[in-house]
Image (cartoon, rainbow, N blue to C red; front, side, top):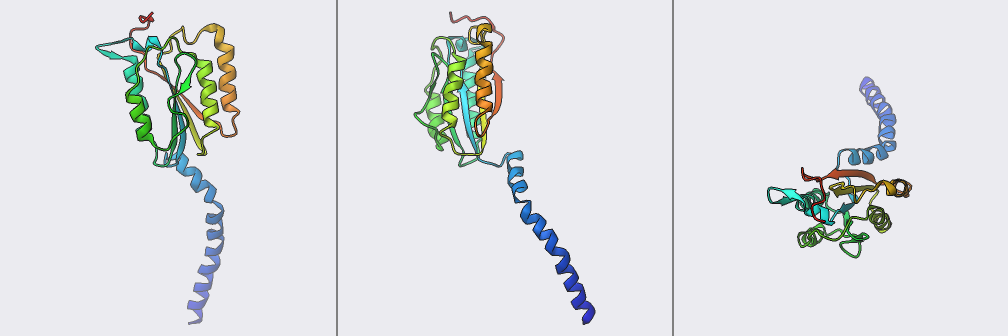
Length: 193
């Protein structure tokens, strides 16, 4: 009987530090959710809707590929994530007035879009997306840029300005993970001009 009591006390004493360690590791568990893709995110999709996005092959334009990819990204977001789509054509503007948790509404607005709005003004669109992030609420953030990377949109004269805009995004209180997605097909010349 005394041995059983001693054994129970030993188990309790050994469990106390283990339980304290688990309680203090809570931030690690929450961080693990982000690593495993289980966390809610604030996502901005920068969608190139310039003239050059009308190029493509086999009846499939670069814009339709980018729009489908944006739709897939929004559909894959964890429930409770907020999102926004920023259009890069002619100065950049958000598709909806403010970020939304209703990704179905955002997807519906995406399906009504067409390309063909001048050239993409990447620095201006990055500034719009930076302002949109200021209205978002989740601690995990991502910026996805869907474009065909035409030279007219990414001119060498704007390299410094682009660098500054990316630096400004990285200096936000919660910096987004930035993903560049090339949707350009074999038609690399700007055939829409």
